[in-house]
Every structure is written in C-alpha cells, then in structure tokens.
Length: 198
Image (cartoon, rainbow, N blue to C red; front, side, top):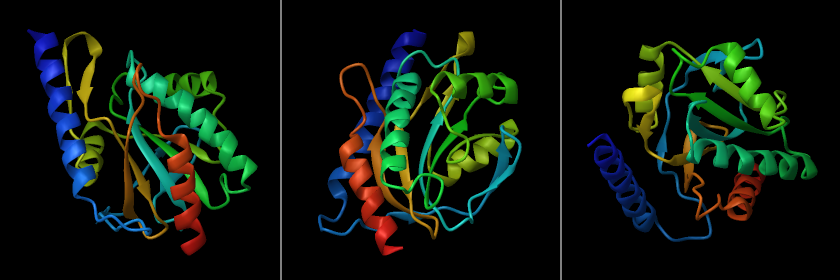
C-alpha cells in the first residue's frame, strides 16, 4: 500500500512538472516563472546562507537516505560543478544549492559526509538544513511538495529550480532517475545565458 501511494505521488508530480513545462512561453529568453522570498538557512560548512547574495543558483531538495533520484542528481551536480569551474563561474557568480528535506536525520555532520562523497566544493556548492518548520516554509516557497513515509523515506517532487540574481525562478528541470540523467548541457547553457544578462 505504501509503495502504491509513493508511486501515485511520483506520477502526479511528474504530471504536474510536464504540465508546467509545456505551458512555458516558448522564446529564446528564459521566462520569469515566479519569485521566491528571501530566506536564510544554516550552511553545514559553517556559515549562515542568505539567498540575497546576487548570484545565480541551481537549487535542489534532497535527503541523505534517498535511495534513487537524490544521489543520481548529486552525481550530475558534481559534473555541473566541474563545468562551472571550467567556465570560471563557480562560486563567483553561480552556486549549486542543496536543501535537506530531513533535518531530523540529516545533521550537519551527516550532510558533510554526504557532500564529501560527491567531491562537493563548499565554496560554491552550498548544503543547507533548517528546522522541520523552516524546511516546510522554504519548500512551500518553491511550491515543492514532500511527505515523510515509514522507514525514514520521503516522497517528494523531483524538480530543480534555476534562480537568477534577483531570486526569480527562470527554469525548472527534472532530477535524475535511472533511465534519464539530468539535462546538464541545457542547464549549463541556461545558467550561462541568465548570468550574462544579470
């Protein structure tokens, strides 16, 4: 029964993602889809993270016990990190941001160890955690849906968000799965495009 609910949730999430994607205005410029409210959150490597830092961000939500889409997405983030460094943009004008959905399990130490497994450079790859209430509020800010299941697992929408320097959402992308990796080339080009215009 739990598996059926999980699969139903994922199906609805994918359907919603597809609906939003196909309704986007089709143009050479990335549309402004929404704007997130400024927030601050603990960055596990020591600093308080502020979204009002005038940088472009690719944001994803994760939890360290996630068995599938999260680790696959982090592998793609690792490759994007290398690409952004090659472009001279990493940490200077662009950041990768990963926000834990499970702060009760994902302590700072647990997230640090998880980040290390993906060779994350904390200069430009930020790992955030907050209280459960803070996490819910921030997820809602992104219109991101998630639900805790038995056994320490979560069902969650699988959307990543491209945010410009004014905290406007400029792109939505699917997280990776076993059959479909993240569209790294498109994401990188979109990042380059909006960074040049910002």
